[in-house]
Amino acid sequence: MIKVGLVGYGTIGKRVADAVAMQKDMKLIGVTAHSYSFNTEVAKQKGYKIFTVNGDADLKLNGINPDGDINNLLEEVDFIVDATPKDIGREDIEKYYKPKKIKAIVQGGEKHKTTGTSFVAQCNYNEALNKNYVRIVSCNTTGLCRTLDAVNKKYGISSVHATMIRRGADPGDIHHGPINAIVPVLEMPSHHGPDVQTVLHNVEIFTTALSVPSTLMHLHTLTVDLKKRASIDDVTELFKNSTRIRLVRNAEHLRSTAEIMEFARDMGRLRGDMPEICVWQEAIGIISNSHNKLLYMQAVHQESDVVPENVDCIRAMTGFKDGNKSIEMTNKTFGIK
Image (tube, rainbow, N blue to C red; front, side, top):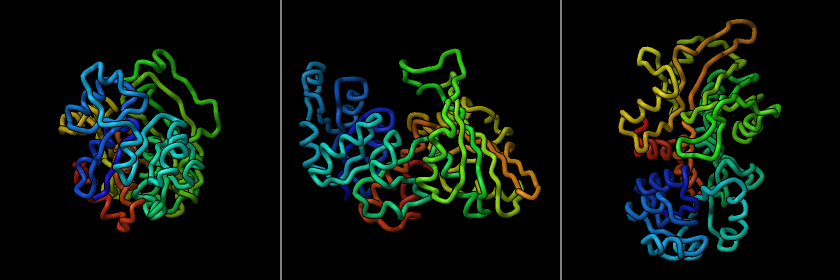
């Protein structure tokens, strides 16, 4: 039984906490709180132990008696998932985890050099085996890696161009936008391409990105030059049979990110999440010339696609060698086929 603590109980952290609590080979010891909020109230209702980071006065004022501070949490765990905002995970490694020799995962807001190992379970599970510190790549990079890895293993990839149409903010975020603009990322390439290469080391990829006034998923358009000839039917079957990828169809009236998220809610997914990468079947195309270009579009639920990756990474870092078995175990708890 792996004893896991969760530092950073926000959008990703609360989902990872619930996911860890569902695993038969893991035990969630507790979560941290900076201050009182509805998140800490929900954690209390779920029976999670709550450990403070910035003192306990605010929590006690609102009826929550903490179980200790972060140092008390670290005394009880074998492993930490750090889901704090950008740069804090890097600081936490040096301040908390290294001195106490505790293994830890950080999230995609950190740079690859923070850990030296970046992770997507179906792509490079073995690279995380028995490592002390590993980074889960961002939601967009996870989405790119899942589908490109499947394509690369079957056909080989000469090069990729991908454009990320990014949601402007998460549904519960009142601080970001845009509200009435389309905002290009004025950086060539965007960070996503180099980030993909931290996982898929030999894939040549160039990425561009922009933000739009939406909170419901990212959307990617990809053009992939293949080394082997392919057909639309073959690629469709490939995606259909690849883990954590879901084919969606116009015939199902799943024509937009809004309808995909409604579908997730109707399936009874916790929080209405869609951790699979959704590829539109009708948007898979092949240009059969000397380069064999594959075109497709996919949607990425930014709040949940990295959550199963955190679970599998815990197993890899603690020495569980069978990556396919770990993915199968995790998928079962998420209801992913």
